[in-house]
Amino acid sequence: MRVNDQIRVREVRLVGPQGEQVGIVPIEKALQLAADVDMDLVEVAPNARPPVCKLLDYGKYKYEAAQKARASRRNQQQTVIKEMKLRPKIDTHDYDTKKGHVERFLKAGDKVKITIMFRGREQSRPEIGRRLLEKLADDISELGTIESQPKQDGRNMIMVVTPTRPKGDGGGKGSGRKGGRQERPSRRERGSSYTTETPQD
Image 1 (cartoon, rainbow, N blue to C red):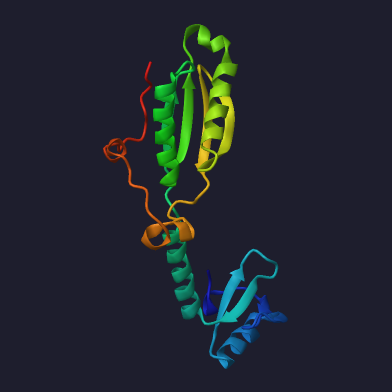
Image 2: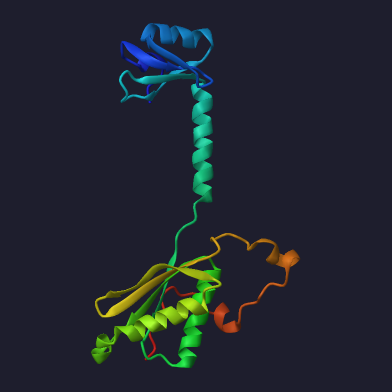
């Protein structure tokens, strides 16, 4: 971004400090107007013809831009994708266990990639895997929504679910010590810290 004497053109389209359009003026006049109001001439659209310049306090402008950039970085949440692997013929106990892990991931604000792994003749019955994914999506619908619909990927079928509550959101009035009783994780959940589940045959 060029400022003041760094701007080497014959004329510019000038914008005043309040956003008012001054018009096309010679660069010398634009620099003089900037000096008259104790501001800087800043080139904001160098590719325009003629370039667009604005009268502003460049030091203040840089400071505010840096503040906004820092705030933006603070507000950005790192996207974490957990993975859960299931077999098409999973039994009820294993299904409930894995569903519990998916729910825990979603409560933590993480996306979950759910993979159905087909073996042998199971590959000829993809509808079984699809029904299983649809059932799981329905069972966890209060915590997550489908971001990527079930789709075949080689010998696997994949679905991605995303939490309904953004990561870092405390859950509003119903969460926390004042809003209600917090649910304590089970001993099994407290001992789990993995990202990817290994399949259970």
